[in-house]
Length: 536
Image 1: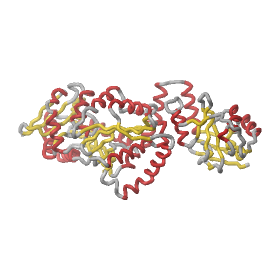
Image 2 (image 1 turned 90 degrees about the horizontal axis):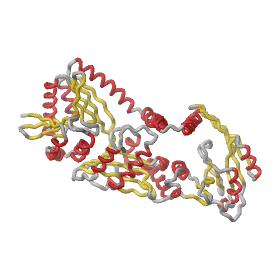
Image 3 (image 1 turned 180 degrees about the vertical axis):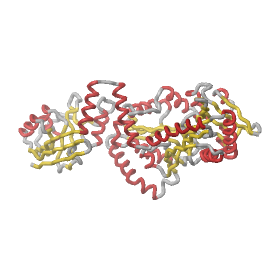
C-alpha cells in the first residue's frame, strides 16, 4: 500500500539521507545534481526551512521515491516545480518510479484540485521524462513540452574515424595556436585545489565583466557552496576543476561535477586577453585527452546552443521542460499563459543572434550604466560609430636597406613582461598576431614590428613582406630617427604606414628616404564596404 509524507526542512531530510543515497546507488545514477553531496549542500545554502516540500513516497513502509518540489499557490491554483533547475529528477529506482509518479500525482490532484506541474530540465533519454508524458496522455491532461539540446561526448566513440574526421581541422587549429603560445612561454594543464579556487572566480568575473551574466556563479554564497563541495568526496560524487596556465597566469578553466561514469561541465571560462590563442578550445581538448584515460564514459556539456558544445559532441540528448495542468478552465488558462511565455523564451534561447545581443550588447550597456564614465562612454560610442560609418586612407612607405649604428636604443619586450600590467588586454593579442614590441629604458613601448606581414586593419588580409624586411607601426614621430638607427634594424628594408591626414609624418618619411609605394582607401557604411588600392 502506497502512502506519502512531506519534509519541509533540511534537518528533517537528513534523517532520510541514507535512503536517498541507496535509491541512487541501486539505479546507478549518473546525475551529479541529485546526489546527496550536491543536493543537500545546495539546500543548506540556498533554501530556508519551509520554502520547499520533499514528498517521500513509501510502499508498505519502504521508501521508494523522493519528489523534491517547491509548492506555491496563486489565484487558487497550486503550482509544483522542481526545487532547482540543475537537471532535477525523481529520486527512485526503475521498479517503483512509474507507480510512484502515478500515485503521487493522483494524490496531489485529489487533495488540491487545481494544479499546474512545471517540471524542468528532465533528460529526454531518462525514464522519468517518458513516464510523465505517458501520465498526461493517459489522464487526458493538457500539457506542453519545451526542449533544449544537450550535447554529449561518448568517450567510447572518440577514436572512431568519423569523429576524428569531424574534428580534424579544429584539432589542427588548436595545436597550431598552442605551439604559437608555447613559443612565448610555458603552457601547463592541471587540477585546481580548493585553496586556489579564487583564481577561477577571478577569471570568470573578468570574462563576464562587460557581458550579461545571470547565473551568479561567483557571488559570495555560491563561492562558499562550491568550496564546501570540494570536501564532499565519495565513490559516486566529486568536483573537478581544471586550469590552463601560461607561465604562472591562469588563462582558462573548466568546472565539472562528476558522478560515477559521467562528467558534467558546469562552467567553462577563459581570460579574454588570450582569446585569440583559443584557450577555451585548448582546455576542452586537454580535458578530453585526460578523461579518455580515466573511468569516465560520458562527458556532458549541459544544455545550451553554444557552437562549441555541438562541435565537440558525439551525440545529442535533450532536456525537457513540462508544463502540465489538471483539466479545470482556470488552471488551463494559466497553463496557456505560462506555455506562451516559455514558447517565446525558448525561441529566443535557440537564437544565436539574440544570445549574442543579450550577452555582448546589453552586457556592455549595463556595464557602462553601472560604471558610468563620460569620457570612456564617448570613446566607446565613437568606436561603435566608426566601425559602421568610416572612411580611412593610409599611405604605405618603404625604406630600402637601412643603414644603422651599432647601438641598441631599444630592447625587445617579451609577453611575460606585459602580464599583470594595465596594458595586458591590448598587448597580449599583438603577440598572437606576430608583432614584436620594443621599449625604451623607462619600459615604455615605443614601437611594434612585424617581420613577415604588413599587418593593419585596412590592409586585410595582411600582405607578405619581401625577405629581409620589417614593418613598423605605432610609434611617435620624435622616436622615428632612433628606431631607424637601432641595431635591430640593420640591413633591413623598413616598411611603414601613415594616415592620409598625417602630413608631418609623411614629410618626415620622405626626408628620411622613404618611398611612397601605394595609397589604400577603405569605405564602410554599415554592412557595405569597399577597399581601393592605388599603386604609385
